Image (cartoon, rainbow, N blue to C red; front, side, top):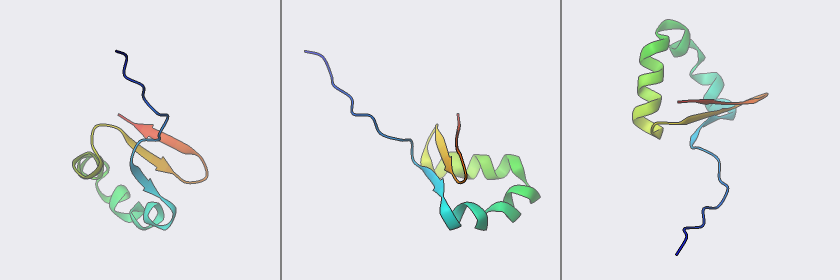
Length: 55
């Protein structure tokens, strides 16, 4: 039996939360990525003016 996967987007940051984290991102970019990976998993989606994925 085959598994059927639905098309869904990766979890991540969007909207105001994305803009609120910018000072943290500027202060310590690597630690911000580590924190996001801890919170959302191996693949993180940034939804703003465009959508980006970090793996």
